[in-house]
Image 1 (spheres, one colour):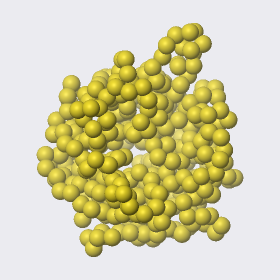
Image 2: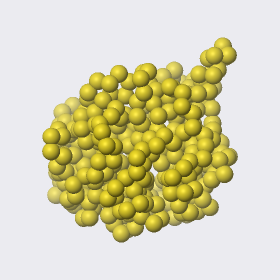
Image 3: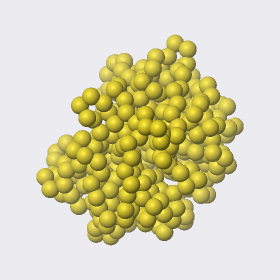
Length: 390
């Protein structure tokens, strides 16, 4: 580690749990290491992380911004299959009264199928409610790659990738590109959900969705979309609490033509002036790699390449007019965690080397609190590592 790294921790697993956390695979039930984890700060600076321990969904809390962690609380009473790797990591959000909300995907019997589960804690993480399924459609099809956020009113938004329309089109003998994006809304702190509301047809099948809550109670969504005939760029839309989705538009213009899903979703943040900032991956011949840009109507401003040729799975967060980005790169021997910070809404940047590991690792998850940026990086060698940007 570089000497300017301010925070590194090693979280101890539960007794009997192996580092790397074993779970069942998403399709056939085979055991494998799952390192997907997410985190969120509460209003008092407590850091909450959701991750997997020996097949359980678990929540851990740090009172010192990641230096140490309290013993984890198991959310699921018994081990069960969980899709907790890569873009399918479990999610966590904090409500305006300190509520803790979780979502994750439970694989079903058929390959690539799943259901989105939800649990909540209303007592500061001491106990969690029995998990429920968010969506009303219960077909054994794809309901996966969930995304979670809470607006200022306390309404919970959950979005996911859904294949019901593709299944229906196939039954009619009609073609259908990709999958679709759906969402649900809870008005009662997660006791019940309204939905299922369609955002758009023809999303990519296996890329994460990025959500940002707005001041008016709506939520901005960014996802990889399949534009006809086979262009896998990104789209934006506004999700409203009444279940409508408006303002669909194309967000990136790399013109990446491929009939496959890259498992490489975007990141999205909004600065104090209301500008939307994104990071994303493309393998188009003229635009290959990870990119940052400010999203505007019919174009991208301040676009720049992020990292080198092996850069992947970038994430970002905003703090006022400042932006923090983190990503991974493999140098042939180690996976390096790198970052960059902008103090002027993306006009100029400073680059940093943050950490490295020789073992498997999750995608970095960037957080902002009190104008500082932190990265949650769950690795097999050092679980639940938290690193503060210089």
